[in-house]
Image (cartoon, rainbow over all chains, first blue to last red; front, side, top):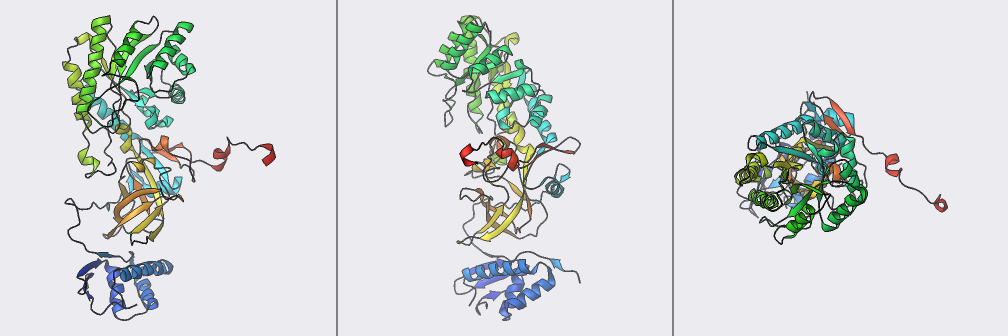
Length: 79
Length: 448
């Protein structure tokens, strides 16, 4: 679960895919997840990090992360 | 360290050149209270989903409509359209505000009597009146609006047999320049049928012609159509006066004024496109005032407005059951109310607001009801904050037709709560129970 190397990401949640020319925006949690993915963190690491920082039930976040990852795949942002 | 507020991660592809020039409206402003009562406490006390009606808003609407018409024309009478919302508590508010009752079936007629409306203040419309209905209405001196020749001849026969003298009007249909033309109710104006029916009444010994009625359509967006309808009724009234020396007491323009809901497929929201009641009042009263009637023979103007007076007094509160992603990537949100309770979601793109403050992030979604049926769609596309299971929502302008046309289908119908003038809450119809649903069923012996 790694974000493609050529995807440009900003800290403000803006993503750009130079291969297709597509741009994306994410909310702050989405940005954090993408930055963690770029650092090759595992799903478990990401769940630990987000649940540590935010007031969220672990099961709920795991489900939301699955859905978010599915969207990244749909948009061809993952390797 | 205190943890930060969570919001579901979301990513949106940015598109250019696809938006309409007005942009996509985002419903992100929370509605936390109805009148001064918190949505959260309403749902915890009365369950979800829940219909809520504001008594204050009904009275405001009624007083506003009366003021608008009465400042333009001296003799105006409103008759509450029972089919729009015939909860007894709602009807009684309208009657307290001076409205008569307008009913379209024997069942509604009995409800009006039960609500204490004197017989002579009940208008009985519609194509379905049994002999028993006609006899009761005639004996109570109610205003019987005749819909077709079969009814006319039934009434003549009954009045002769029983020596009754019913007060009657005819319903007239006509071409007012709108589509579809409602010609299935009443007698046609253009082909002379309406005049023939009038002469039949005026030549009868027992029937007393007191009024003329029309109802040109529903959710009317054209004020000109009302001017045309008024002119045609005035023409019939004038002809009856000239040829039979009989001046009718009233002309009844029916209802059909729209609320500010947005019809499906409309490009702009209803709040921007729907004419105000003032504009309808101008169109109607200008015609009557200038038609040429003498001061003392000016007919009373009767209006049977329903939707425009109740829609924005009604709310449906509900809860998110689940969120999911569809195969094409769209977000889907499943709610605990569907088109079985929110029947008008078949016609309107209802405004729906979150009941609490969410983050600034929003997403487009489809809103589904809880029914295990593919047709159960509340909104095909709406932009709302990132919703989670358990979040509460408020649907606006649901006061008209939902609490009469709702279906007991798959789930049971919920509580209806009235918020009174002092912001006290009262259940005006209890949520249904299995026992209530099954009380009319009977099981044959061989299946016991």
